[in-house]
Image (cartoon, rainbow, N blue to C red; front, side, top):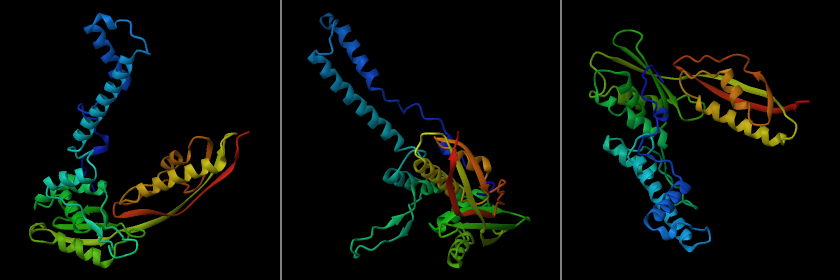
Length: 298
């Protein structure tokens, strides 16, 4: 992503209205309330029938509090999901994009596929930027993402006054967009109600930096080697997928953190040997991950 920096919703503190659920706390409060109202209940035993009644009441109250938590989250951009997020996005004039219409006549029927919650959330957050025609970075990013659900990431640069270069990373394959996607984005960005008269906008394809990850895991005695290896492999795969974005560096520290799972004594990282510094108009793509058990600590 370019120099534009939207608020990172994942790092916001949990809102005060979201309550931590505590069954024991609610139950103990009910017992204390009952005892305070009637001295006849001052010496309750766990076997007393009223205890079971209070347990049911406490459980139902916890369910109600959980429902209030969910209802509160449903109207917050940082937490809303699925149809709740659809309705929240509609308030900002943003609609979830269709990726594939599917085929209801197929056997079995193929359902339509839509953009993810995270992508819709990001576009909704950027939507207010899209109302400007003064050429802010956020506006170009919003309209590029709105052009097609196949746009994964956007970088905006202005090397000279009046010149704007928009780089597009695709969701397909390694991330290089096809000519049709570039045309769709260019058409959207050059619309009269989007592009300032003084800007000359060029849309280009992202370049891809290929790399491999190869590592040996030295394990402690005891843990199942294949289980540990698969866990580390999954974490590395998650790391490289999360960093398949424009200008995202691939760091040794990030790879070590992904590889160093429970049961691993140390990691011997063979590839890469140094941090991979990725320019803003490029994205890193890992085309091979090899994780092996190299032995056990003695």
